Image (cartoon, rainbow, N blue to C red; front, top):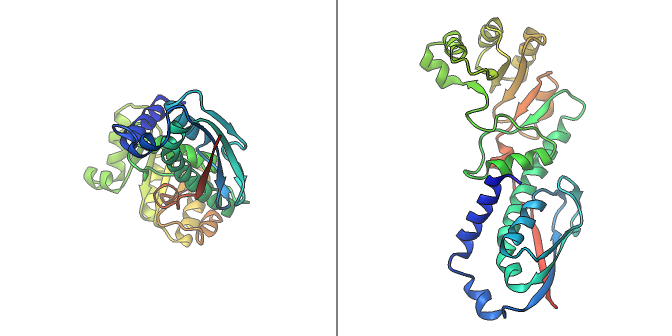
Length: 276
């Protein structure tokens, strides 16, 4: 597991536990044990099983965590996902943090799968964006992949994406691309196009990818025809489950959707304990 994920788990536990769980520590004896099970309360795609395991094991490495399904699997309401057994205090202390991770990640994975299913039969691939919760990007993007989507750039460092503000600052697409290439970064260059003239300009500059920003379906169809495979095309802007299939049918290569990570509904779980 990535070090940054482990560090985030430690931070989340420090945030929640602080100086100690006053309720659990005052009621539950230190040597008490219990068992429990985590149950899905809705249909969807599960993500974050190993994150939940890591939460409990940060508190007590001896906790038994038996995953009954794998990340990325589909489940129906009422399905048992995890069996837990061990000391009662760390189980109770870790409950909310583990469920928070599972809920957010499974919500993202479930929404992603809905979009992936909606473009089935087309060439389009569903991408996430940088619209992630601060500090949770690695987990958000992992959840997208578990839902069947693909990751766009991870951050500002692994692709050159020339957007409207960069273009306006440089005085035009051609100048912005020239400056980007002169940086000799070796990174792939993507240019945002607001009009079909912008698409033509980007094609003449031989950039690798073109982002079609808030274009109509008709404009995207024309952009695909103009491009004829000379660059990868990415549709972006206010994409919904109701519109995504029509966008995919234009022939674009990618559809990026910020809602995957900024608007996914938290997946509902319950953790039921019993004393041993």
